[in-house]
Length: 233
Image (cartoon, rainbow, N blue to C red; front, side, top):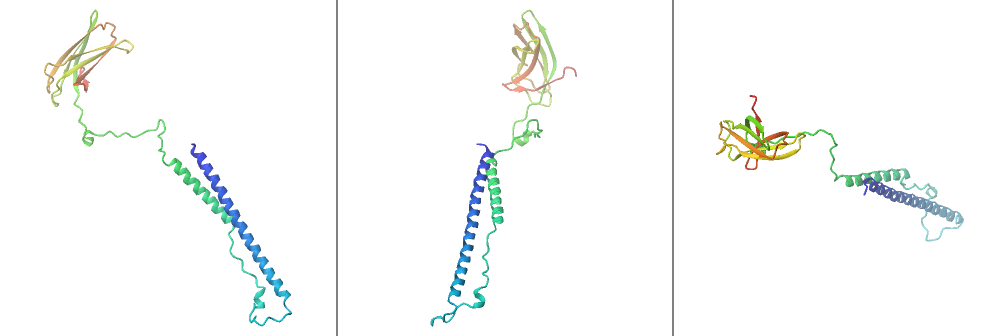
């Protein structure tokens, strides 16, 4: 249901209720005032009718003539304006409470295109294992045969890193417009790649005469090993 519809309905219902209450209060005050005036008029008429008679023997007191016609102080009334103001305040408060109840549980949404600050957690803070240092690609070449495509290269493991075992080179062959054609892989080094050592690889992919470009990556037990291009250094 629309939140604004709920708020509007609640406000109208509350305003109607408070208007009815205010009308009844004003009506009751008017009735009480009329009753007091009628009672005072009846007392005046009764006293005027029996002014020449002697007071009965059992009537030793009576009302003081000086105070008989004194004005009766009116009881404080509730102002209709004050009632209306109070009703309006209650309506506004109720509408605000309903609106906060309906929309308070909604979470704000970030606008499209708004900039957000991204904080990258360090491996030490999260306890995640650190990524292995990048290998260095020092040579890369290819050869196109009659019905095959061969990729050769050399990769070096920096001397500041640990040994990399079960290292495999993976080549993705693509068409001239970037579409995937096929792939191949080959082992790098017989027993792995020790720190500070270099190893070569050769990948022969048959049925790839339509190769337009290719990409080389390295994996270790189904995990991608990063590398940097050092061929021009």
